[in-house]
Image (cartoon, rainbow, N blue to C red):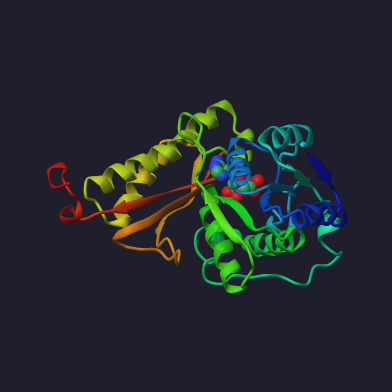
Length: 293
Ligand code: AMP
């Protein structure tokens, strides 16, 4: 496995792989790699011949009061994980490699970035789409891999790639969870043991939502209300949003018909966690019983 700290080094190694006819995969990350990232790298090694993992804590996607400075960084562990997962190249540039002193060119996706996290993190998705465009231009992958954990990000990136005719495929991999249901995240490291327990209320609220939908409930206000009740059991939890939205437009919906994305952002103490599930409602008449199959 190689390590490239500059764009020039990365391009040199990747173009050699491309010239050898290899299919190039890219897994963009901010490091502090964990089981979620590993699942992406393994999916990439399964589908590609040469896998690049980028590790870059991208300053332009953090707001002024967010955790850019204290975002966990662990280069040694990241290198071991990448090696063991079968990555071929780590691209780990400095901020000055990626951005000129003043960045004046941005990539913006409208509409899809207005709801959910976009409402609470102004400028966040502009930073994400801009850095992903840069990474796509530097690596020129055949496929880039993203996690369903950041559902809005994956949908925004897919749309950007389609709208700008970028010549690559986006693959979205399922959310990896701890055995007790908490979605794995680099930010889980910030949680105290007490907060870690409270964080379980998030996946419990999704389970309740799924249970209600299975029982025939389709009213989103009601479903969100029952999720809020569960999360409010923790005095440390501050709900930023709990939303049920269309899986394509990300617009809020009132009544579930077919598939919907249930997404939330909740602060446990000072740690902001996000998570989501896709639910689908099937009218009773459309549900086939065992005898009918
Ligand atoms: P990050 O380093 O947090 O920017 O994440 C890099 C990539 O890993 C993104 O595409 C995330 O959606 C994905 N990812 C993060 N956590 C998980 C998880 N628990 N399961 C699956 N993918 C994840």
